[in-house]
Image (cartoon, rainbow, N blue to C red; front, side, top):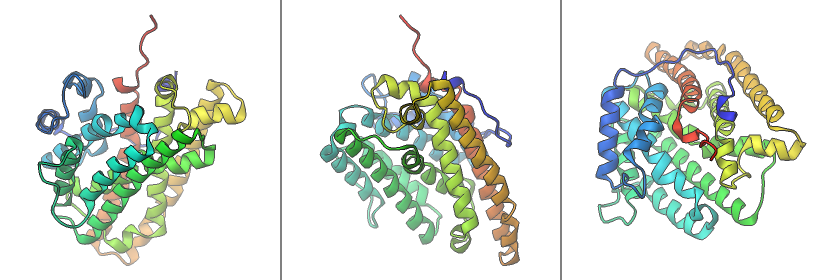
Length: 323
């Protein structure tokens, strides 16, 4: 049922014209880095999960090269990294810390890891990071690296919680999921793949900071709606808002889903109210920088709307038929 839960978003779904090119490139890229295979992630899964479509929905204004980068990142996220934490790794903090530390080193200043790095996942991330930084300022690289570290640390925190048998409350879950869904990393990528950059001072204004936070919360809640059955079947019930609400408030799935939908609606309404204040930044921004800010906000629309559409078509969250 959760994958079929619908809620309205006020922005149109857009897609990149470079989708076929990105799909072909990302499949070749995953194979090059040893991330495709019967024991890891098959080409059929990449296609069924619609990961190239996700990149195209997220970044409809990306250049051809930019969408290739985005497609590679979507492939990296969902099989080589995220799904590893669904198994034994996700319940072993020491091992998870070692994996996350190796990945975090990719973002450290200096040379990227060489081909001899033990994990193909790490070598692939090093390639993504190196390409992500091309043409971007030091300020962008610093904040993007920080968001990557926060994403990795969130996965490690979830591992500790599983090991300790700890289940978050609803408010903590909303806050934690902002980081664990990698929304901030994807938000950073809007500028890189579309060929612009928001000035650092504008990026850190309260208005844009709140819009980014609201976007991350909407994506996290939407993901929890459609992934609840998958996570419940795997016994991973401590990091999903829908499942937490069921337990915390003693309510059924339909009511819990309605509460999550309502929470998303309140954030979308708040987003619109805060967005009305974005124009105020024009009193001190240059014309070009004001255009960049507007492109960023439109990009946030695309992330929320694209995530909603993708989650309801992706085979990743499809409930297997009963036997």
